[in-house]
Image (cartoon, rainbow, N blue to C red; front, side, top):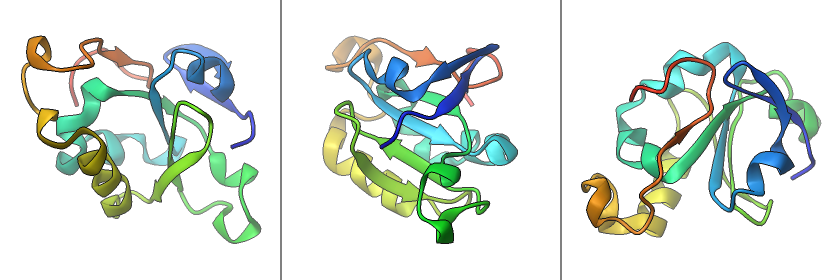
Length: 126
């Protein structure tokens, strides 16, 4: 995935800068932030992801530009899955295969215990 400018909270940063933390990054379209953050299917995985906003469709193929594309990026920078607000099955399917039964368990019993919310709003759960 190319290094694109994204927003993490109030700061403008780059995708590769966030990937240096060694976690999966979900880049959600700026115009559809609320729809994705409130998607109940993604709820069990928020603690396993860094979430940022950005319009990654501009860095993708022409057919994806301007279509509210959400992209899950692996820590090595490769795209793991793509989705759109209301159609995140590919993303949640990948996350379910990756994290399996650990998703939704208390943080103290999980492999990844750090919760990092980088998306534009608060640090509360969606």
